[in-house]
Length: 280
Image: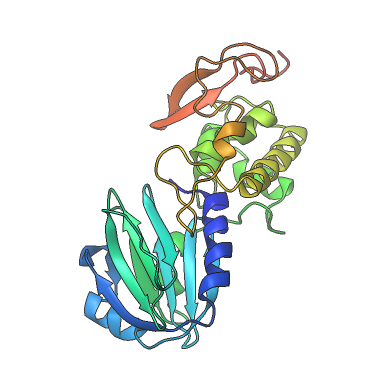
């Protein structure tokens, strides 16, 4: 699933390409992906409208129209939003939604597993998108601080990995970047969130920001499905410390990376660098 760095990369590219363009027509090849309003009303809300720009909140992509309407894209596991200029083609067998732009360009929403969603909201209706309404502060934001993390985790016995994945606590972090941040902070993913010290939260806060920035700088992480706004792949998968490296030697100590599951999510860690008990 695209996480905050991947969605931010898509946002930056699409913002440059789409701002000022006008949507001439819309075609839905899979109407059930449009959560609200009804597909026919959705089409009426977007056709003829000028795109003001692209925004992002956590893992959600936001297309802002000059009319005030905002389109909310949730790519989920395999969704991609790709801009194709006039005269070029997009070879993809999983196109679900097509925005036809004045002048011949197109914006394609492709999705292999079809879990992605789109909705259109008017000003003041943002609360209709539950994930947006409940989302906590995201990395790199002024609200995301070590003190905030420690206060949210106080008394919680949930594993710290699960805490980081809870979008109500921290917006935008997914499986890849949670594993990477915990490794850099030398915190075992199974540690109870409420057991971390002030110093450990400071290290983890810095590590989260570090891995998010690194993911953006490397163009995102592509193992199978992630594509940027131009349809290209990222390279951050070549620079990961633990994620998807089970059975390979740790880049820092040489001990083999281990794999387990926490809350149903695959989890990668170094048993030497990230020892479970504090003081080991």
